[in-house]
Image 1 (cartoon, rainbow, N blue to C red):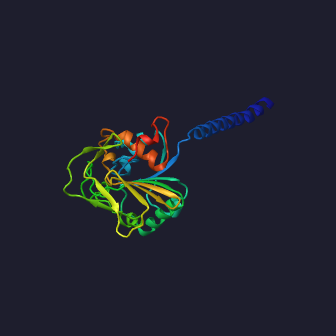
Image 2: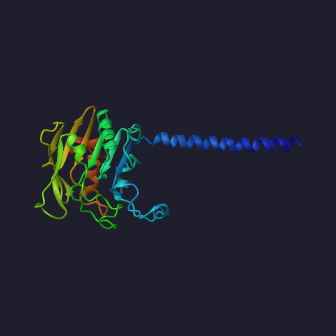
Image 3: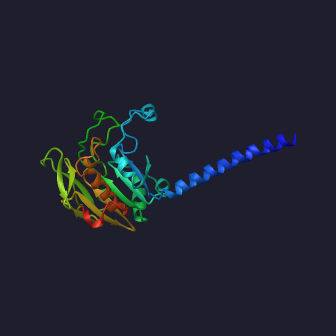
Length: 260
């Protein structure tokens, strides 16, 4: 009887010890993952892929966006669906990939977050050209036209679009590297706006120092086409992240190699 009692008491202790070991292992793995966390929002389906609905999303049958795998080599992505003071407070880095039009509250929250030291990379394309499985007008489709004039204007910028420009995907040379563009926009200083940004590569990029934070704004999103990566796409994406967010990988090369 004493032996049975001893065994009965010993079994839970053994299981509990296994639980502790498993928890310690999980904690060690999490501690070893030193990748910085980057909040992500946008209509380009980097995180979830082009899922038609929750059933397809849960089944895992949706093709993944190539950029997620590339980004997650160096950072952890945290998807957001709304920008607010509370949702942004826990993050230091933010990637906006052709976001929908922002509400007044979101514009205020984003501006305050950047001014308080946040680092932003934002793709804003005036004429999206990438392929999508969803028809024009479908809300699941990437936003066809950028609707970010309020926040851009607040930062002293306007987004222009030249209808007579070269059509079709082609490469620009950015710091001697091929960079894919298609019907790109042009960022310019807004009349009477605050001069917080410097324009580079014929307005394809704008670097902005805003309060204690910064923003790197890109006026074309062909780099993030679902059917990519295009030539130079992976390298260009990681260098934009390195430059705009100040996150460098050991294998990404010196920062000065890429000056958009």
